[in-house]
Image (cartoon, rainbow, N blue to C red; front, side, top):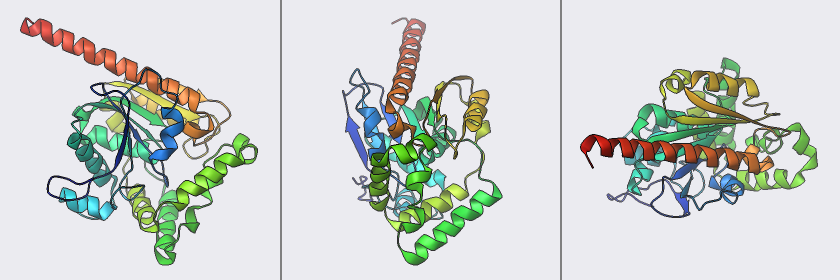
Amino acid sequence: MTTTDGMPQVHTMRRGAPDRLPLVLLHGFPLDHRMWLDVVDLLTGDPTVLGVDLPGFGASPSGPDAAQALGAAADPSLEVVADAVAAALRGQGVDRAVVAGLSLGGYVAMALVERHPDLVAGLGLVDTKSTADTEEARAKRLEIARTVTAEMRVDAVLGMRTALLGTTNRVGRPDLTERLELWIRDQGPAAIAWVQEAMAARPDRTHVLAGYQGPAVVVVGEEDEIAPVAAAQHMVDALTDAELVVVPAVGHMSSNESPEPVASALRNLLARAEAGASAGAAAGGERTGN
């Protein structure tokens, strides 16, 4: 997909009925929108769903290309990613949506709340955290970025195919390990390095959540070691109107390890946001005498 001036735009998968408040799904690292398909298949009521390939992943242009299209600096940043997603959504006529992201996708969703607050009618944060990396985690990300860039292979992140899963599923669900390896191998090493640097540079956005007034849900796998239950509770405590859903016996990939409760949580979030939009429209009609 390209913009009106011929520049590349991030790719989105669209499903469901038109003219509904859409649910926008932002994937984790180092994957693409396919990681959400298990959840999408369980969303009843034919909602409008947009699955985004973040810059560099899936069918989307690279991070530097997305930055060029936006007229932004090419330095790796999640701000560029968020702005690229917002531009793609508006290019499809979406000016209000429920936005849900897992891990990296959650970081981008929080950046959208900060930079494009009018776009976010509801917020879903799945197996993610609002805090910045520790110095140790940041250094590890940058080291992986350097290794991937030097070798131009994704091997440095292949270990994530098991680390992303909970202890229950690492051995018991080889099908999940195989799917994750397939999805990881489909991504480009340049994208993996660029986004690792972008994640390393991200700030703490807990204050952004504290200022967000819309409905939210925070979902976390009980066995998530990357963004644990304590990190999820930290976000719930910051938010004004948030529900916490802890999915038992799963890790960081709750969307694939146990998609049913994730789909239920997002379906409920969408209903809350739609109800809020309807109430707002009714109140607006009363004020104008319509």
